[in-house]
Image (tube, rainbow over all chains, first blue to last red; front, side, top):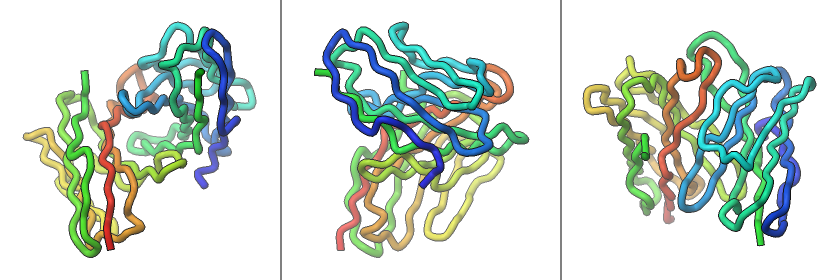
Length: 115
Length: 117
């Protein structure tokens, strides 16, 4: 158990809908990263938040957005869903320590199925 | 553009054998190279990692070999066991991307390892 929690575990929804995925980082970790895992694209970085502020953006679609709240939990919002958005979505957390501490701890993921 | 290329896509090894997974990268700004292990239905878990100023790192049965000039690194699993059957991902971090504090992972496509008894 990594200490990172994600809800829900599974989500089935229809095209055009909007969903929210939730992540709680490990106690004390300030950074939250979101990744998408699909069969054709592999694991891809979407976005990072650090202590409530957006820190880095990867291959995140404009239809997707995220935020990190004062209690450090994070939500990933996916809207106008398309069939191709079906994937596993992982959240990871890490604590910002001195250079060299690049460990990220992944949650169990949310499997999104768009029908 | 695939920044970290991983091979093979799948690997079948006999119990007790050596599993070898290779990765190559182009971005010379990458400065940390972790390997992740993922079991079905689980999130990736950090296995072992190496910095580019080290040529080899060993932890138990797992060894990373790193060739900075060739921009290649590999994972060796000695005495492979059925419990090692999982998908393995190499990754790279460019620690100074977007300023300090951003350690986003760039992953290879993964290698599905099956260790047969």
